[in-house]
Length: 220
Ligand SMILES: [Zn+2]
Image 1 (cartoon, rainbow, N blue to C red):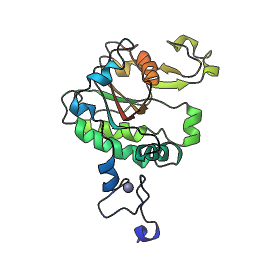
Image 2 (image 1 turned 180 degrees about the vertical axis):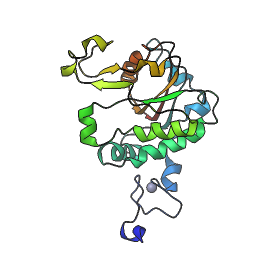
Image 3 (image 1 turned 180 degrees about the horizontal axis):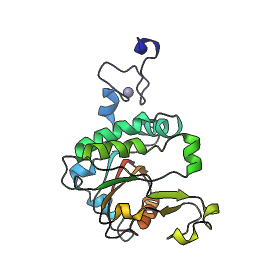
Image 4 (image 1 turned 90 degrees about the vertical axis):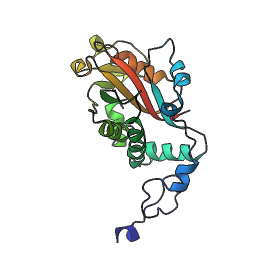
């Protein structure tokens, strides 16, 4: 009945979802440009961070393509309230990582945070569902209270907690005990230059005996 009143549509192509389909239709799923570095080897992706910080392993599910299906999906996720898309990709990758020896030894999932003002405005962190589903599949904790994003204008207040100052993006860490001796899976929606992930990793590496792997939905 609910399906008749509120038919579920694919967030990729807007066609009606069939029974058994959820969030994205099979046709769209099959036309996604798969990256899947956790299956094919992640040296290329790891090399992108060479000299910036040490990445244990890194992967992304799909390649981001401008004006394509992937752009539609990420746009829906980020700007049109379609948080489900994040959970969809998290479930997908979580299932695959649980059987992947390079990734199934991570201890904790930590998302790239939004500034709390932006979080209030959007209502959700677009990478939260992705991270939570991966954590659930690997049976490990998801923690969004370790890494925080603070605006440059507020940075003076947190001066003694900041490792690195940047006018555009400033991150800080708290509850460092949580990540002590941990292999962290840092998650984000998309890798473009890798600068955001680098800033986050720099903060997380303040933790004692911490190592970092990366998983994102897309890579540009
Ligand atoms: Zn579709």
